[in-house]
Image (tube, rainbow, N blue to C red; front, side):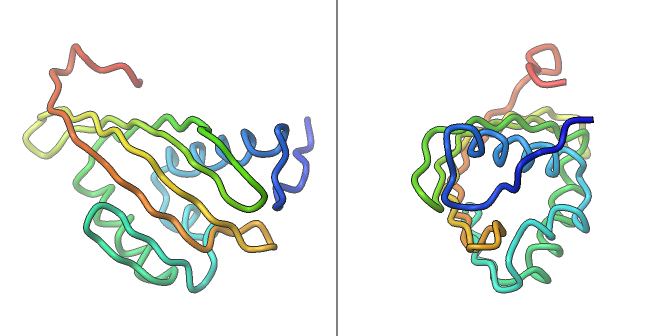
Length: 138
């Protein structure tokens, strides 16, 4: 079993992609209890038009999100980084209760506390209705 290095800022060309992969893996679990632990107690978020502060609000948001975004599958890609900040592009796919499939594209800006927890996350997201046979993420 391979041991991962501590993924603390300042990030390096080796640790930054690992931090992004860890985030992707956590989000693909669709487990708000797991995901929320990656954020500081007072983490600030902007997600589309939602402004959240703290783990409790983030947990509630993620719980609502994954109840309506069914069979959610996400892919993240590191765009750039410097010290304790990262820019990440992402796409994810899901279907709603009516079985309409969607692909969402976006960018995130992340800022990390010295302990490696995310203290700020700003996400801009666009949605595109797709047919099930157009899915790219499985």
